[in-house]
Length: 577
Image (tube, rainbow, N blue to C red; front, side, top):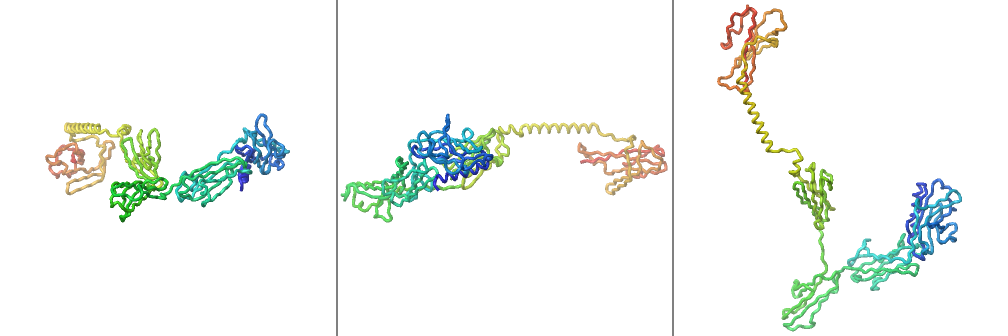
């Protein structure tokens, strides 16, 4: 498929896609370059409004106008031989194709052109600026030089190594696809083109390409290849390329000066030479009388002064121009430090790793809170400095993260308190805490002393209370304990001064705590708890007091008691903690 067919296929495909929108539209390049005396090719497609689709027939006129004041009709498809331009419009109107070739281009073709479609019905439309694109034809008097490039594995290179397969490519611009240029090669030395060289030529949309494919040897070093482009069978342009081939030392030789034999006591110089690219770096001299060979001297020349019979023998020279670079690649390694507001992280890896800071999994960048600066340390190391302007949250999740093609690594930083940061946060001022504790302890001690004094100066009175008996409620309860002589006897009535009751024969009630008194010498303080209880004796005249036989400390002689008298007696039980 030639360039014209490819262009037409591409443009028609674009036309069909644009047709979906059903509006007036045109697709053509903004500028085309034309060589004077040749032809110019303008790829073009158009579309129309859906309203006029039935008006578009193959009899429609496809017209080109040269823009200006006034505009000029330069080509009409219905009469291609009558206008100022000669040429052809490809395809048919129904294919919406406006691809055009103008022949015999001259300087008068310079300018801007627009396309118009006309039918005998309603469809009459010009694709003119500013609503539509126009094409600019630029006419040149002479073609440019071709381009020569050296490719290896489809990548352009400047030098190659002996034994490599390369592609030497020459390309030139196509101005008229119907009359393309011709590309030819020559070499210096000339015989190189005949040594296992494959030549291929092809035509693309806008370029003509010629390739020389061969395997380079040391003989190609500094050889020159020249490509010549011939346009319109008379205009030629050429471009050359000199190859740079690297190869090991070849044709190594040794020479003696002066030549021939040497008289004892004389001086002699041995010289070594070799052909290599790059030039030989190391020459080494050996004597073949030793097994294994041991180096005598390094350098291109070996000079022996004051010779003697022991110097006789064969000398060997070796040449070396090769060196090897061992490139060990590895995943990044991190070293880091953090001091108050400044954290530093260095990553070392091959290939060179990337380095970033992360806080809670989010990548940090320069902001009002943080500043980050990076520094390249050689080809395999990178250093990053993080400056914290304001306190960061979740400092335990601050990470330095590094990665390259062989792995990733990270360093998590523990929280580093900053004195300036602490001023903005809630924290303890230890001298103030100690002072407050001392003041509080002193106040508590003074309060305790005052409370003890008050207790001692105002003891609770012990006596008989004969008022407000309404709060005494007696229920049917009987508790006995043999070990403690603790007895509780109650009846089921309530003595109340508020609600009188009918006279009844009332049993007595008494509470006796035999062990209620404190031990001798016991000291009572603020931790002693005192409970007071009341003993109530209520009996009729005919009732005998059952407590008359109690222990002496509980016996009191009651005189002048009326038959219905009520006797209150206070008893205190103190609980000591």
